[in-house]
Structures are given as C-alpha cells and as structure tokens.
Image 1: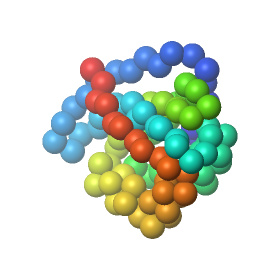
Image 2 (image 1 turned 180 degrees about the vertical axis):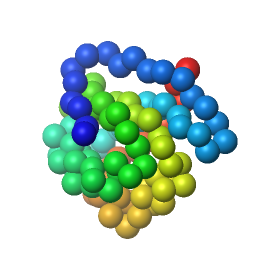
Image 3 (image 1 turned 30 degrees about the vertical axis):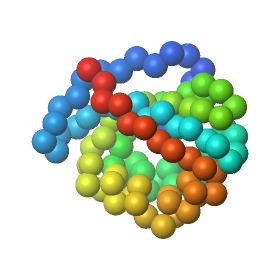
Image 4 (image 1 turned 90 degrees about the vertical axis):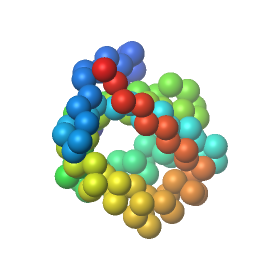
Length: 103
C-alpha cells in the first residue's frame, strides 16, 4: 500500500547487483500539479507493487513530489517505467524523475 505523508523522509540502506535498494524519486511536474500526478501515479499502483514496496509519497510543492520506496525487482521496474502507459502519462504531465540511492 502506498502511504501519503507530509513529513520529511527517512531512508535505509542500498545494496547493489540485483538486491533490494532503497531510493528517493524526486518528481518534477511541469505540465500539471501534484494532485493530477498523484491520480496518474495511483492508476498503476497494483502493477508497481510487483517491483517495489514500502512506498511513501510526500508532496513537496504544487509541482514536485518525493517518493521513497524499496526496489525489489529493478528489471521489472525498468520495464514498467518504459511502458507506453507510464511514458505517455509522464509526457502529458511533463514529468521528469530523478532517482537517488539512499544509505
């Protein structure tokens, strides 16, 4: 289940070579707002759950968000991120995502 919070994020460790990784995704929205992005993001939550867990979403402004999550399957998440559904939705909203591993 995705959790929406309005508090600073705290993160754990990262392990490489296909193991689980904790990351923060910084989401910049240039053609929409946080609420429109959140509706889009929630629309593919069930598919995302196959590849990530412990999602925490934080609104940082009307046009930015942070998402903390643990990657369980990087190959699956990469395929989902490159899917037509996600790419089209991100293009409509002008979304650019930057992933930062956390330690």
